[in-house]
Image 1 (spheres, helix red, strand yellow):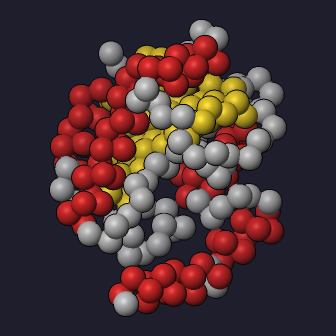
Image 2: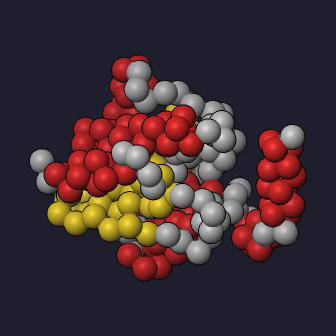
Length: 206
C-alpha cells in the first residue's frame, strides 16, 4: 500500500514539476540536465575541446548538454548498462564498465586522448529500504571514482552523485586522497527530500 502511495506521489510530482516541463520545452531527455547546468554555471567544469566520460548516461540529457559545451573539438563517451537512443556527437557503450571487455571498449574509443572530466549520475534501483539502498548508492560512487583514477589526466576533474548517510564520509576521504579539492553541491533541481548530493572533485593527482 505504501509503495503505491509513493508511486502516486512520484507521478503527481513528476507531471507538475517545472523542470520536467522545461526539459520538454528545451528538448532535453530528462529533468536531470538542470542539475548539471547549475553546477556548470557555478563551477565551469566544462570547456570547449574537453574529453568527457558520462557514466550512467541513459536517457542522455547530461550527454546532450555536455556536447553543446565541449563543441566539435571535444569528445563525449557515454556508458550505461541500459540502452540509450543515439545522440549526435556522443559515442555510447551499453555495458557494465566493471567488466574488462567494456573497459577495453571505452579505452579504445578514447584513442589515447587524455580524459579531462568524468561525470556520473549513476543511482541504484531503489527498494525503499535505506539499509539496502544506501550501500548500493555509495558503491556506485566508488565505482565512478575507481574509473576516474584509471582514466583521468593529472589535473582532471570528477563529478559524481552520492547519497548522504553511511559510507558518505569514507567516500569523501577517498576523494580527498586523489584530488586537491572536494566540494558538495545540492542543485535546486534535486528534489528537497532526496538525500542525493553531487561531489565535485578537482585537480586529480596520481
